[in-house]
Image 1 (tube, rainbow, N blue to C red):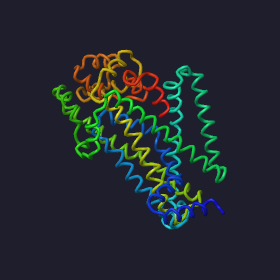
Image 2 (cartoon, rainbow, N blue to C red):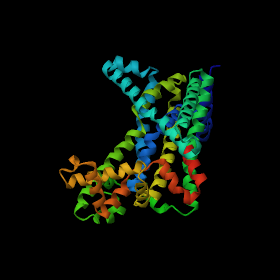
Image 3 (cartoon, helix red, strand yellow):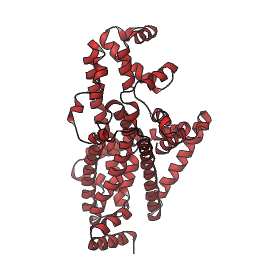
Image 4 (tube, rainbow, N blue to C red):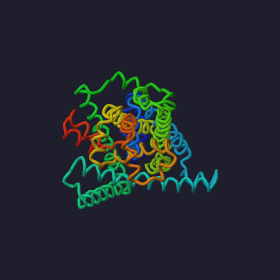
Length: 399
């Protein structure tokens, strides 16, 4: 008996026993959805969730769940059509719609893989060097970590190309990896809760969708915006526009075009057909929605609690003159000064530095609050709450 026939027997027997048995069987047989979850839990999702917490606090807790639910609805439709027809989607689109659309889909998916997947090596290398093994934080360590990640990734992909046993092992590895990511960030939130650092009333209220976030800044920033005086309208518009961009980015990074191409082929490779349609939708729900919402939600919570409405951490980094936050801080000040002085962009670097220094403290404080942070900055700010070892290890493993 083939693996596919055995799966079908399990599904049929489970359906006769009832909902509980069916759910348990679906969990056991799930696979392609976890592959999608591993793809989407990348640098884009991490950076997007971090900045959502920075700029909006807990007010956009509802965004990621809705973005992923919409994405899963689309992927479920793709899987339903693929499993109903049994046809390879690339060939079906070329035949029934247009070769231009089919090839455009393929090329765009390949480009998305390059744009989204290759930066994960840089993200993973930085996490190992900065969070997990600081002794490797040098040029030689970069090569060691990068080559190790490449070898591990190549071995895992080789499993997938080794037939049914390889696919099963590949899916087990993915489930473990996604589970570790979720548990790592979940551990951070649990540790912060134990220290009394989280306001769960505000967090839960942030799960209620609020369309006003498209048009106006978070209420907690109003005091600081008004303090800028005649420049308050500029800051209000800038913050609102940034929020729109981040909201769109969150929807874009939830489900990528490369996932729409990979999903149907991963299902066909497993030999799934019409009777697997219910399993496919359940697989996407548990393998994609649950890990994504939990992981990104925990990042938003941690970032909001440590960065939203806070400026001192950025001021400390700016004083040292080194760090990603310095560039983000200066970029915001430059944009504000450009709006005030038409000739600002043509000034010398010395003149720009002088202008940044002389700008009002209220403008500086707001720029510092809005400056983008990275995972290292978040781990560092959590050290006083949960300890250096816990903060660096959990974030390093999660990233």
